[in-house]
Image (cartoon, rainbow, N blue to C red; front, side):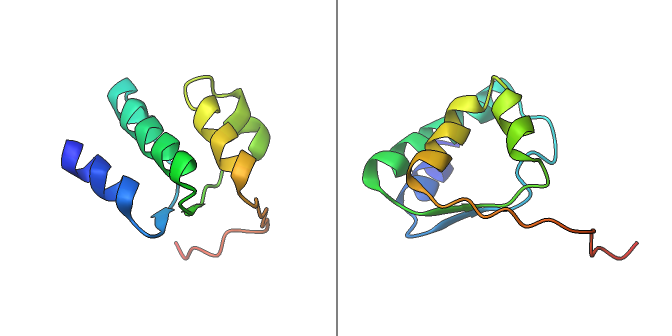
Length: 87
C-alpha cells in the first residue's frame, strides 16, 4: 500500500475515475488524503470524476478536507446529463 501511495503522489497527472462509487474504509481515506495533500503541496494535477454532486461531496465529513483541496487549486467542471451507460 505504501508503494502505491508513493506512485500516486509522484505521478505527473493522477486520474481517479468514479470517485465515491462505493463506501471507503477509514484506512483508504487516510491513504487518499496523504496522496491529495502531497499533490496539493507539490502543485501536481489531478483529474477526479464522480457522479456525486458538489453538495454531497462537501457534506461527507470523512472526505471533506480532500474535496476542499481539490477545489482550492483546481478548476472544477460540472458536466451533467443522462447516463450514457448501456445496460
